[in-house]
Image 1 (cartoon, rainbow, N blue to C red):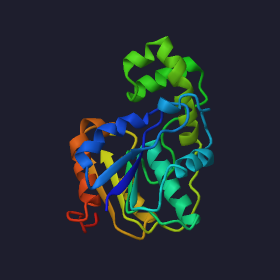
Image 2: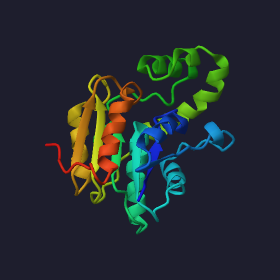
Image 3: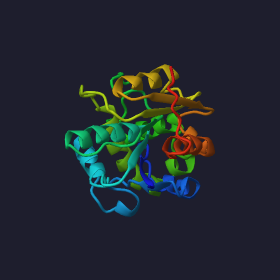
Image 4: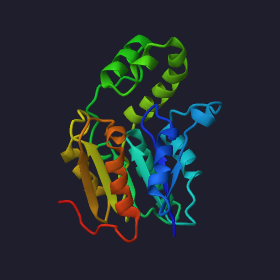
Length: 238
């Protein structure tokens, strides 16, 4: 049976970044990008900067009546993790796998400087340093008017996140990272092993925080191998 893969983007990201995944992963995996409020086809929906409200929104998108998995990159990794916990607490079937990309394990402290409260000019300058927003966007007042509230809401969720102690998940966890990512190193990815009773596998790719784009084919290969019942690996990273 086809596995639905619910995908969550990074702070300020749009679900459309996952649309190109559908064809390479078919027919074993059906890609279901999750669009958060205030962007894309939900542009008119009010932005949310509260974790529990965003997780509730994510949960409303997940159909647990058929096999599914969760994939999140950066902020999306935390949202996917919290959604997996929320589904279990509701007594619903858990995911076949939780893919966490570009984010340290949730119990580890924030290392980056907090920026969500900064004035617009300082906030934009810090975004420029993070190198995750195209320069053409940061230099366009029209783009910034639309994007800044989204980024500020997402950074508020990310920077105010506090892990709530809970039993480990029962599904496998696959942690993905970029070898040149200044915000997340391999040791921090390895700490995800504390959040599952199942195997915890990790894979490092060339590139920085946004390796998800530059190494798309390699990332999809890992996802396909995990979710394809014929080729799913049984190994576990040390």
